[in-house]
Image (cartoon, rainbow, N blue to C red; front, side):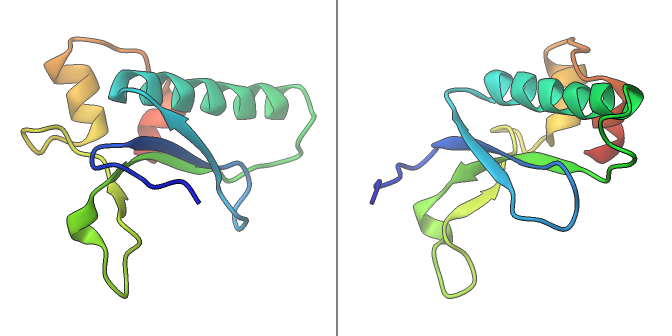
Length: 108
């Protein structure tokens, strides 16, 4: 079993609720944001091209924190910047970037 380290990051994505999430390790918040953007656009592409008749997706970025391990939490928690900003604020305000499409912004 892989031993996780404090600050380790992973993306979670559920392409159709309800189902088990797809998880993918990333090396930085920005990489995580880009993966989420790609997954969001891919779901929309499949819908627009009649691969899926409908979809209800969700996703996010998780950070591992040893201090959060207890009976209710396995140590993975939603990512926030060091200043406590959520993903949407961090991308759009702090970095001046607008990489997320409207579908993903709606989900955050």
